[in-house]
Image (cartoon, rainbow, N blue to C red; front, side, top):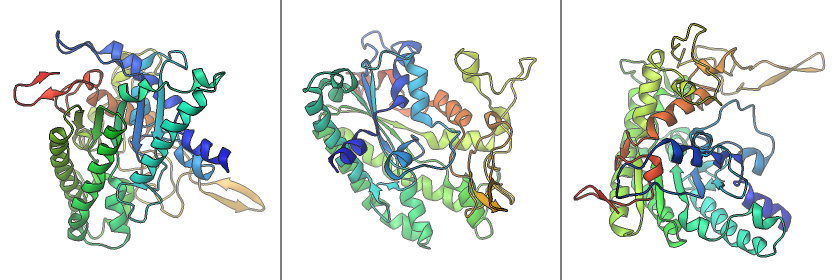
Length: 392
């Protein structure tokens, strides 16, 4: 039992954190007075929008996953693969059972916080034993110098939908969700965390699994997304922005960056043909997925059709998701297969974005263009004075 607990507590320390150093080198400091941050670690609290791997680590084999999410993009984009002891990353999330409030959610944010606190204590204990643990586990100071990322909340909204709540009923419990969210950030702060990178939630009404279930009963916007669900996400984001503003006052030593991934994702989905894998032009270790042989940009395609799925308008069936098998004459046959080229698609399985899409999203947010304050990721350790816009 002890070994199982250790394994669960440590499941987040994995490859995904490798990108931060690369990014720190790619983007110079935005102020002569402020040096670029030297984050030795990334700890992520979130759901399956910001990491992969937790489901398999905690509950067994997950469905097929071509995608790599936004935080792993940061890892690869930043680090150039430093020695294993140079950067550590923890991810405290298990898809698709993670949320903030615990509303029909086994791996709520408070559980992730428990895992983090347990990992902090256990990592130092085992590191003190010497041997291989000294190089595998982060030293204590890495926790205070780490970047703490949060990308969570979507499942709190969809949990209400699954219980047949109205949009107004879900909006009514958002303030309570925000209380849990703020308490979680304060808890990490009390544990020594100082640098926070917080994503808002994306456009629910543009996600295939929402459109598949509710397209007959909800009005569409001019791009085909379901307006009431996007308005719900925007209500959540407005409350989150207010919470972040309050936390900046309550936590005087914290540098908190609010990132508007909603706008980036909405732009990608609704203008998919205009966007492509720009990262491939600037990083040789990425395959030039979205460029033709003549070098012209090929935009993303079919944003409302899942790459991996089975049947229907959206190539999505909730009872026959990506990787679904049937038995024919005693043999298992996969009928929910991947599309031919995921690199030009936006949605992987109707729920999550493809690796190419997440890579594109990361490239838009990493320089601070969608952040408040508008600082790049490699400057997120600096607290900005919102009165005079100076950095501390």
